[in-house]
Length: 66
Image (cartoon, rainbow, N blue to C red):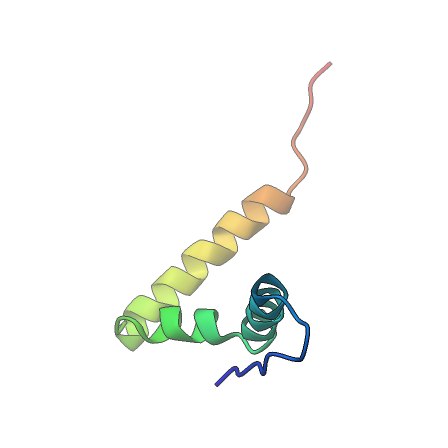
């Protein structure tokens, strides 16, 4: 769990910024999204393959005809 102690003379905005950075580094949001619903193993594989296809489509250079 991310925890930030406010230091003397530190503004609330500064502490909040440090807290957000710490949450991002610890991947807390990613983990909660992953656990927010259950996917069956077969369904998880299907989603993973679909995302891989989407990534590969983006990376593939387009054939430009001149």
